[in-house]
Image 1 (cartoon, helix red, strand yellow):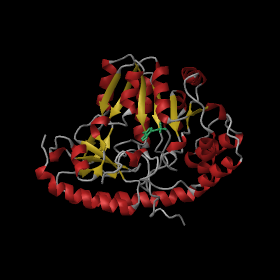
Image 2 (cartoon, protein in one colour):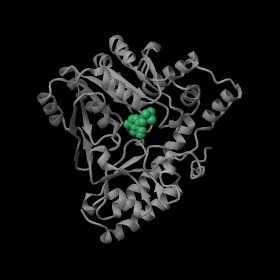
Image 3 (cartoon, helix red, strand yellow):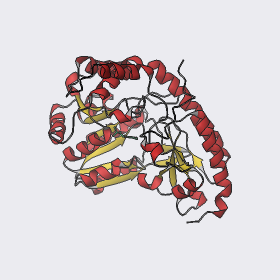
Length: 384
Ligand SMILES: Cc1ncc(COP(=O)(O)O)c(C=O)c1O
């Protein structure tokens, strides 16, 4: 019904992802932006809005708010009130605002999406890291490390939580979330839960559970950040939102935003409504394509010496451990082999790279051939 095998040519477009390697034979598999066209219902809605021809300041319309409320209820059985919604032009903005409104140190699990590491310092707050652990090929939170970080830094006020997790691809399960909720309650933490990848659960036996949906106390201390941008591939439309049930916490958040954070552009709002209301079939087709891409990637990596990856439960991002290759500069090496990856060092883990498989199957196959060749050629590369 939807053709996700052919993707538009982005080479001569304004794409950040493709522009990085313009004029070079390097397949861009880095920034979290997929190569698929946006869903037809989203494109129709944006075109209809454009046809109106007046592009003045907009305000979120009741139907747009309703679409978000209905979506959260349908997908997660999460009933929120309209006034809990705070519209944002992006999640990174929300992460920074959360750090600025927390009034104390910030704790996060590493490796993690780079703005989690940058936002606390930019907000004049200390950053504390608790590394995730990989046990028997499965990434987990290290509860001892989280407790120790709090014992050493009792002034910590905010946990920046990535759920599902970029880059390790975990869809955190209820027992894990309950542990986090209990931990946050014992240490009086606000939990800023970045759930931008929540509609990209690839494993059929797993479901996303919003952190705030766990219980009343979790809801009260939560700032949940969400957006249609990753799932429906519309990050360029800059539309996101925070759900903040607690009035005082929400007011603090909105005060920090005031005069600095711009309103969401009207095409973003229109696209959000269409994505959440009319695109479930498209999302299912997308998930099927991503699952196949993930499985082909995993099968190839399993055959390669010196590279490994854990099972990706969610997201279209694979986290590759290339430490055994002993490369002086993994990203530069793979670029020399025609592959553009994200640098693990930016996520707090040198020796790793992140591969974005949100692309046409054919492009991924091309990348997998290059990856096999790159591993064969590795003996000639500069070693760490
Ligand atoms: C976990 C996570 N949060 C936030 C973002 C970016 O959000 P935005 O483009 O809305 O600022 C990304 C993009 O890759 C992400 O992976």
